[in-house]
Amino acid sequence: MLVRAFFVEVEKIQIPFSNQKGQSLVEFAIILPVVLIILIGMLEFGLILNAYLSINNCSREGARLGVVGGSDNEIENLIKSISPNLNTDKLSVSINPSQAYRKRGESLTVTVEYSYDVITPIISIIINEEINLKIQTTMRIE
Image (cartoon, rainbow, N blue to C red):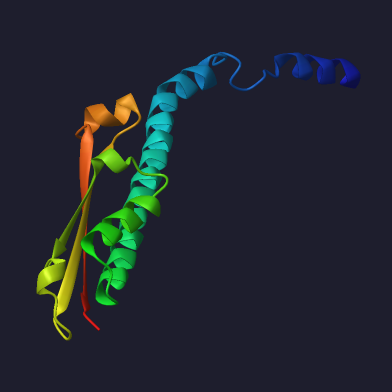
């Protein structure tokens, strides 16, 4: 009789959450777009940061060349040659003062502007299609 009572109790035990078979699939379907937008946004931010650091380096190198006696054309050619991951058609360089007006001890300012095209369509809906990046470097002429 004790054995029979044990088997009766075992039959009454139910598996927990057996009526919620599709819950995890629904939760995954709800959270997947949010996670993808966050991941794509991180990727796009990394690419924008890479472009920003590239034009920062280009501006600094161009200013350095200018303060040691480089011409305006040499500065522009250097800036365009050391930025291989950027579209040089969207890269603009301005140098102030021009080569004829540079004097020792004065400041030389090199400004580099770049229009970054957002790659992913989802992010381009959220923000503008182009992001304008501008770096200005000033050094004393030697």
